[in-house]
Length: 83
Image (cartoon, rainbow, N blue to C red):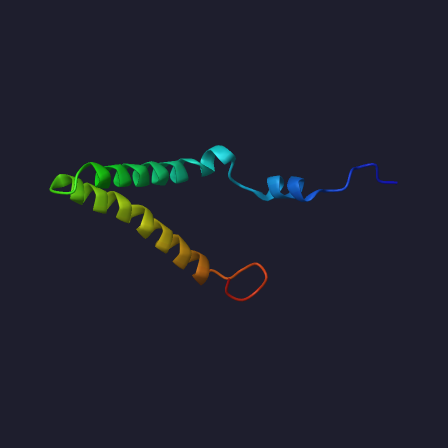
């Protein structure tokens, strides 16, 4: 008889995940920091360089989000068809 415990959903997820948690978190933290900087620069100054810094730093996370959504929608899902 087989004495091995049955696979759980968590153990199969950990085995199939090629990236560790450390490899996943730097980009979300960087985008969060960029968003925080953009919001603070919009609050601190409303003219000149502050305006350009706030627009630029708030536009980058938006562009990254749109690019990731387009990539996810154009990739076929594992269940068949487009996701």
